Length: 324
Ligand code: NAP
Image (cartoon, rainbow, N blue to C red; front, side):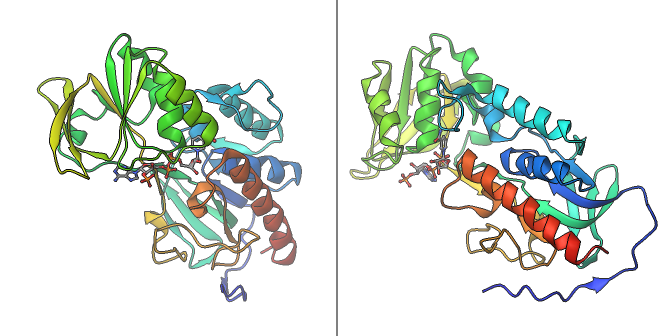
């Protein structure tokens, strides 16, 4: 159980100081921007440090089919654009910077970016998660030049080519299906003999003549001289290795929470996710977390948005109780 007793060292409330906000939201994805919409409507003086991917993961997604309100689905980039526009409409300040360091030991909390230092009476951490990497030879060498974690960004370069997709979850299958628009063949390499992806996506993938599946297999190396020519794979049941020829490799093996910056300040679980209670409080009063950075289980847009809303409502209560 987290201890939410307020034990903060207080500083006297400074006069209206530039760089001091009632709330700073770290991250401009679905969680952060939903929190921003709620905070803006509650007239909380709010800054969003949007970070490198405005709109968050939907901006790297082709079609979002499971966000309520869009019966035909909505393009991920369009949804991301709408999240940003809606947050801006309610008067929150957006800066396209990333936090590089935080000090949560005293209140107001301190947040640094490359060019500035900000202070905040409360913080919502909503930095999300980044794609996990395989850690095999060739991956770094060809990253951005044949190895990718974003089919929406790079799929177009693989017209009539053959690509390998690594992973068996929703991302691998959804993005693999997207890649069939361009590639002549999409080979899904998965370490088990069953996909993890939701049934509806599995059914679509198995029915797609451009998709091929290589099960019980791991990628050991990404091959090539100047460009990717294939992957060396190993069958985990037989131990046999072989080469799959391919022009590109898309890696979808899950996500890692972006929590290194908070280590030693916020309580993290054994996988590095921020620990929160059901009201999105962290172990530090006044610091809240929302979205994928604190969610190892669901990692859904609608859940991220929901936790963002909860965090903002809790900030409102917190600031009423502890305005200084
Ligand atoms: P995920 O569900 O964690 O799946 C990761 C996949 O990669 C699994 O199949 C896993 O294998 C495999 N894997 C993990 N580490 C590996 C390694 N080192 N080498 C080889 N394979 C490895 O991740 P995700 O697909 O990115 O999805 C993340 C979350 O977002 C999920 O909750 C998913 O439902 C959600 N999501 C939802 C949608 C949607 O609903 N529209 C779209 C995308 C993502 P095992 O199966 O053996 O563990």
